[in-house]
Amino acid sequence: MTFSTFLQEFDRIQLLRDTKTPHVRVGRPARLLPQEIVAGLAWHVMQPSGTFARSIEMITRKHLSESALSERRQSLGTGPWKNALKIALRPLADPARHPDAFYKGYRLVGVDGTSLNVANTPPMKEMRSKTKTRRGSAAFHRIGCAALAELGSHTPLALRIGEDDESESALAASVVEQLTGEDLIIADRYYGSGKWAARFLAMPQKPMFMLRVQERLNAVTVRRLKDGSRIVKVHDPQSGISILLRELKAKVRRPGKKWVKIRFWTNLLDESLYPAQELIPLYAMRWEQEIAFREIKKHLHGDNTLLSHTSVTAVQEICALFMAQAMVSRARCAVGLRQNVPIMQVSFQKTLDACRNLCWLTAISGTYISKRQLQTIVRRIEKDLAKQLSPPRRKRSCPRMVRQPINKWPRLMKNDYDKGDFEYEIRKS
Image 1 (cartoon, one colour):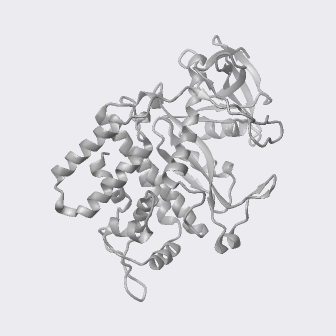
Image 2 (cartoon, one colour; image 1 turned 45 degrees about the horizontal axis):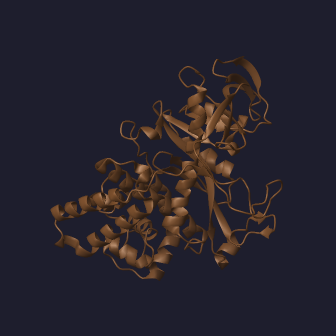
Image 3 (cartoon, rainbow, N blue to C red; image 1 turned 120 degrees about the horizontal axis):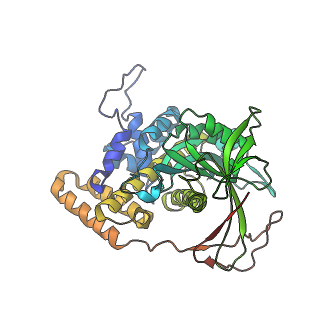
């Protein structure tokens, strides 16, 4: 994708926009197809200001009132948005062009959960209860979701939303069904258990996985390997059987700082093909999923609560946010490829601003700008973004402390940062 075809991403969502919708009800046929409303909302969540009606008009050149659009969204439910996710969320990185997004031919994929706040409106109070915290109920209603993300490009691959307050585990169990045999999923300690390892092994797609696990979990040694790892038997509590995994242990620290113990389970069993010295540093890529969530919450959304006032429209808005992130990620990737610069150093915020401005110009000018002129503008935008690359990410980490301690967490009194490359040492099991 390039900037000149940015609006074609909305056309992909509007697959049926040129077909006639059968009119079976009494009254006038709807002026907007469901696909046009879905695409309009994806465009609307990318805007820093303006009404939904104005966004719809820019995309479709059809004007409807805010009240009419609100009623239409309520009547459509969440189905059209879920169907659109299957079109908008797809892999982006290429092994030849984006080697950092792969390991030994496997696409690096992360799975994690997050939640977004919804305003305390009467419809939300009637349909949902607030999350319980250690100080009582949360300030806002929250809608949780689980997502797969391509770690090398931050593009989302699949999404499941807790419409009925499902747990992260239940949502993630559904979302990982989108994995393929060419994926290597990297997950944190929430997924580090025999239950999740057995679930991945039982999947027909046979994805590879690398799960961080707690030190207290038991595993029976089958044999020790030359690189310090070992083949172990792990109990699956659901089936009651034992599964064979490879366990890796290591220590990690910043130069001169305290060592931290880490432990992993993986189904990459061949120590000669997948040595522990390569797998251990690979876990640092999991943090890219947290940055991808930040792109949605800070740059795309940029507010404490969603704009929606009901549970149905909130789910629609979350779908639209992830679709918008996927489209901006593809524009960002196009800059990296055409200008031969690293994707992760192309600013997400600046790419988002360029997409907004270019689409606004295209919508306003109509046919006054020729295709050749538009291509010239696109090339200049890409060159300008390449000149504004973000510097390589600083090698630093924050202290594992909080300002208001919970349980055994130490209290943060003064901000401090550790800098430099991580040091790794393999621990023999």
